Image (tube, rainbow, N blue to C red; front, side, top):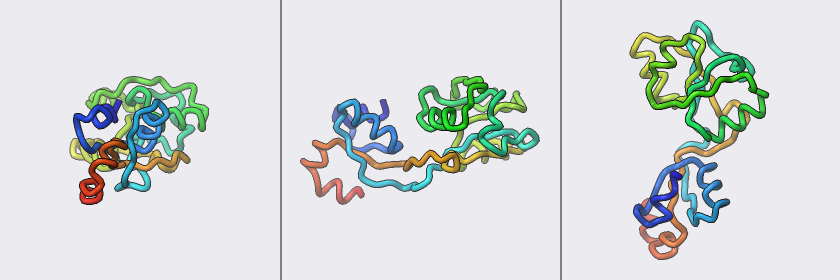
Length: 158
């Protein structure tokens, strides 16, 4: 889990998504979100420009490269009734996406589209934030105990 190093005391601060922090708290992990840099997450679902998915419903029948357990995907899949998507683990490599002109790949608007365009691969994308999934991104967080013991450090970092 993303919050593990903070809760165990191996690190003082971490950066994650709001839903990851909420999920950790549901499991009894005493972490606290402090601030965010993104009110709307920069996550996107990327398709090839010539086979653009212009709407989330157009993902059905395609292969999607995504990190297993991604909460925003669970929401989108349910919200848009996407039972015809073949889900494949995203390894951080784009070769599978590049080789399949009908594939869709998760990404950050600032990363994967840029990398693909540098390789002369035209892309289109759907912003996860436009799906109705409201999630803060890049949330700075710490352990409750660290916040109580070092409020001056927490204020300085924030």
